[in-house]
Amino acid sequence: MRDHTKLRAFELADALVLSVYRVTRGFPKEELFGLTAQLRRAVLSTASNIVEGCARHSKSDYVRFLDMAFGSAREVEYQISVAHRLNYVSKREYDPLHAQCVETSKVLGALIRSLRE
Image 1: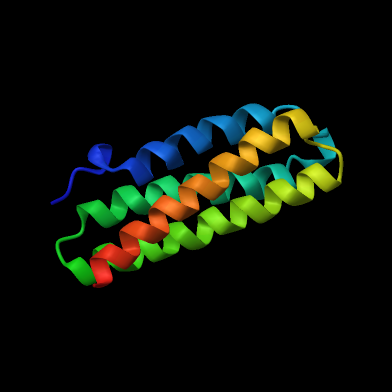
Image 2: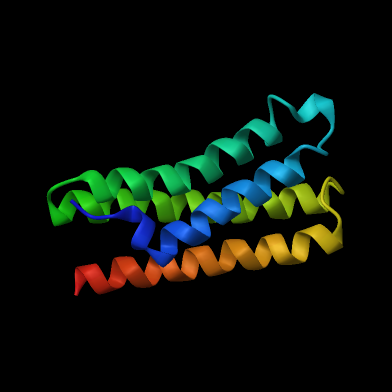
């Protein structure tokens, strides 16, 4: 069994969870069951799939869960972009949040590639 807390990808995904939760607090109430819920679900899925993958015994299961985490990270990146374009997220909030999304995806993608080689 792998220790998810030792992975840079998990550290980034976990930090992204906290950032997304902070920024979505300011979303309009009518988005509570829309974009707010979708963003929170996707960002939690990113970190949670890394944790679950680490708990799997086979390498193929591990990589499969990392793939799902990667997909969720990209989903978060898109949804943050939508929130910014709807003016739910200011440019000042968007830029560092987007950078966090990109970094999380890059590190996760590199981990997946290294495991497939």
